[in-house]
Image (cartoon, rainbow, N blue to C red):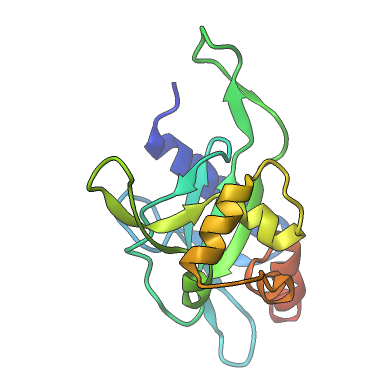
Amino acid sequence: MIQKAQTGIAAEFWFFSQLHRLGYESYITLGNTKSVDIVVKLNDKLRTTLSFDVKAKLKFGGAFQYLDNIPNKENHFVVFIDLKTEKESSNTKKRIFLNEPQCYIVKSKDLDQIAHAWKAAKTSTTGYGFSDKMLWYLKHQEPKSITKNNIEEFKKAHKLSQIDFQKYEAIVWTLEDFENRYYSDK
């Protein structure tokens, strides 16, 4: 069975490899208790450094619940990765690939636009996070396995009557969006 630490490391190395495939000067940090997983140095006039905190799941279907420790800094991003795996069957621990991993990138300064404080209904557990499938919904405007309840909870938590998808199109990035933004600064 894959452990939580292995999920994180797998996602970090996957994202790191994608940055290299795109030609970015990238560096990965190792360890389990850091807030910066990957650093990218740009070739712009200021020699800007971008940092990334990678969060991952084997398969989206739940929530990113504990995002309280994300640094709110300029040029710091949170990368949410769906590794697209599942158990082969209920009686095995073997995992199979469903598809290529998928990621969404959010500037840490914009995280409040997606995440919110929550309290569990049956316990005293609290946190700061959001439903992982909201990323797909906000970016692509398609329900794709998200419930109406998830949508209504999101609107309530953010005091919205409607969701401004153009706003979220600019906040939630794909790797292609990232490349379009930073291509000329490699």
